[in-house]
Image (cartoon, rainbow, N blue to C red; front, top):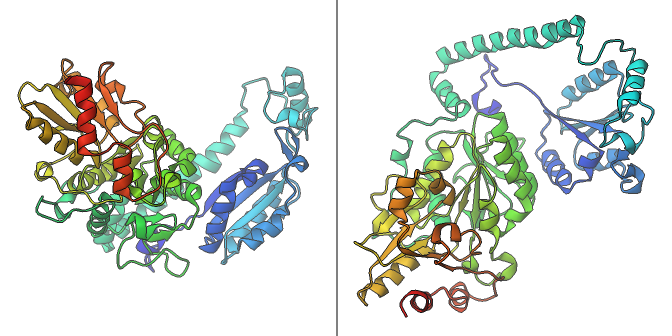
Length: 528
């Protein structure tokens, strides 16, 4: 953002980013991923304060960690500083000031502290995860020279915070508002775009310039149509950008004719995250938490397991990060069961405040992106195919998929309702056509998002899925969770085992996802 919007005469974005971590954080694998990338990208305005107390929950740190942190971080192109006494605020201040002077690489400041300082069990794991108790609390207060009663905050402390933080913050904010006002007057176009990112609010008609698809067009994998949508969206605002975990060519998420984000090109709109899925998602959360831009991250769907904790944090914290997961079923082909997602859909759908969308064709994919960019406090996950899918005639005039499910093929007094998602919607339509040849009335529902459908009122839910009609779900994934929509007497056609190796179409046939095999299952259940 600094590279995009700062001008020689008006610096509206010039802050540093600070992070706090402890011994345990530096043992986590994500710290290696994130620090490796930060050093590689020369993020010199990143400063990490490391609370180094040599204690972990189980005891002394030496029982599980013996790395030379200084050599480790320097090897990752970081600067290293050390403060020997964590209670010496002046030394900490000096270290931060020195870190700000670094022009090459981020900085880690190791601050040596004593855990539970002032208590009788200071410097031990006994104060790591348990309350110290009233007696020890009194001792600590005595050692601090703190003579006030519990829950009493002296006026001097109030005054310090008020003057040092509240008043100073107001003053700095007023200065920034004045700079921003001048910026608006001198650079109105850039200001408008900046506000689109800060407010996370695109123009109401922003989708008018995003390509629509009709059934005469060639079949496209939804990862490919998503890639086309990304190109159109990238032209609407420059603060739309994204990255991939070494899979741009497979995910189709790169912005064409744009450079990679690097030290020498911080306007770059494609982040090459490398094979660092967890760090990628965590960094994406940080970008959204910072505000000012629309960001997406991408990898193979099966690798959602690597970054699930970051998705959970997106949902918990209200970060509207867009996750693009491609190769979303057994149709990935020869890579076999290690790369064929089975349980991932059910897992992600179980996370509160998360919207999972599995579009059926290019038009549903287009509208899935609309939902993602309009989301304010909810992460959106796009589950996209590797294999080509037909552009459905039924979606040509589709305006939105905000209700999560809709009737894609209707009939009067249906005997059966087929509910499908993603690539299985066209399969369900073919199955219904076969039943039509036998004079059976079958309605088809596309359900791109269970979460959005659950948000609808009972009237709409009953309109789409009336209770007195038998229902079948069709999805190339775990059947877990589908009985909510099909009922106790419904049929859930899915895959409750791991996949197999082979060509995509052969694997689908073998695991029962062909028109004839699905029709036979339904017939045996309901029409015999």
